[in-house]
Image (tube, rainbow, N blue to C red; front, side, top):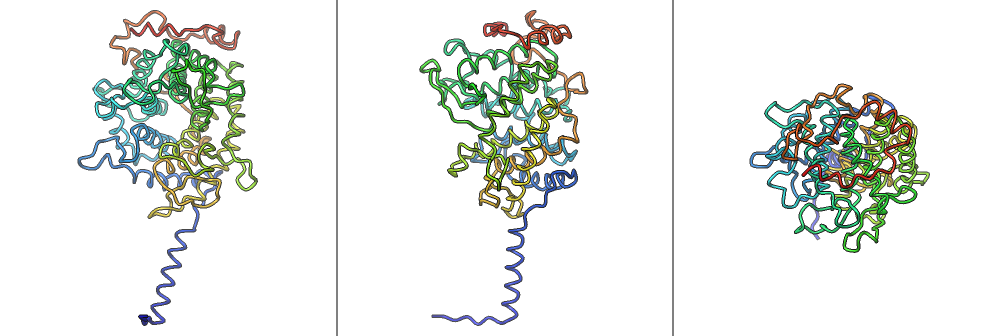
Length: 462
């Protein structure tokens, strides 16, 4: 056995260093969810850590892309989080890389189908980039140069292209998960693809006041309900297959599926001046969130991904899902104010729990997956960091006005013909502005557009 002589002074130096190291590992972030400065300070640190994962602004890399193992859709969500960060905090640090990324990934046609992704791109992938463009329009994010497609036009192009993909050959409608038949999952009609289309339509309807978008939102909700993706108690199930005409449902529930339908429903409630049926749907979706918020006294009302967290089986994708539910709940409290108390009662404990376990990485502020554990679980990544950042910064909702429209200050110029290969003047007569009569008459009297089914209106895009 070999002995090493160590001086007493050396031991004390070592112990001091070890104590400092341990101290940096166990000191949780101090977050006061009722204090604006505290929330902004924590959000700033988490945003810095989030951007450390990004390589697209490095020489030789592609703007807008995240490195492996992150898929393209999550990169779109990543920049949506940075837009939301700017909206809530006013910090412009990441605006340049965000603008560069969206414009680069917009592609030659401004439809968020860039050549480096098109062959593997699904409808939900395209939609998450469209959400980021739509957020840019709704928050007055600095507009692109005049020779570039506008934020609103990008979202409109995606909507038009996806409306043209609405598939009446099986299941009486619906969007497929994948765009191209050679990709796995082409036969799957899932909640997230159809929920994204519903949400985008609802947001475009509210932003532009155009009734065609509202009709598509109505139609998509009705289809999802009829086929069983929306359950009797407003559960949002993962998907169904056209191979058996959508007779079987995959009953897995994810946070972001609930969130995307909730977000779209809140926009429809706002658009229709509080139509009762949309209020009922919003309330139902909020009640259905009992699956995603802990009932344990030690983690009461803390958000968790019930389909994978208890089994420690969350994937690179699913670690990010809580980010979108947190983001969208911040919005709905503004545009559907009757939800405020419920939303805040869930966002605040979730934010505290998220901050309490952001103890990883070189900075000691990278965040883990499972907030209900009460301490750092040893994981980190883009999804974990986005989720913590979104749920924390959503607690700044009282400091912002909520998503804008073109009548309340939104400055992004749209193009209703984007993605159709036609000009606005060539669009059919059904494409008309939503009038006050439409709101006060048809919707207020009936609680919505009634039972009108407009699946075949896809032909107006051909």
